[in-house]
Length: 105
Image (tube, rainbow, N blue to C red; front, side):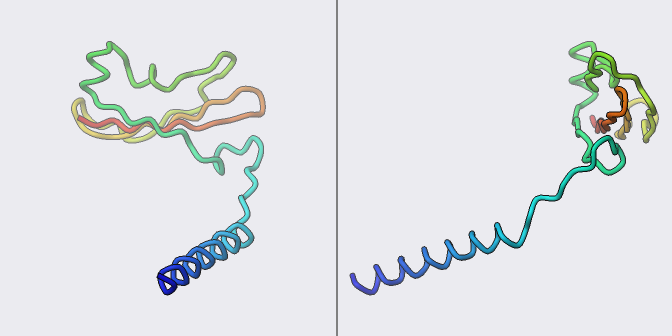
């Protein structure tokens, strides 16, 4: 019983030290303001059958907010029925964001 307690306390101590060291050595990176190319895009994953069942288009699932405008839309749409993606870049004033829509069967 004493050996078991010692082993458990040693493992708990090691886990605590790893947790403390991990927090010290990996600070959260600061996100640049207004840089769409550097910011992580929002990923939307939809199937063509779900879009058709809901009566929506790819542009409908992007979620354009009030006051936003479409800066660019590019990607690999492919022929009808093919898998692909569309990369949207939206802007409102100096703020920009990206939405990548992954489309599959």
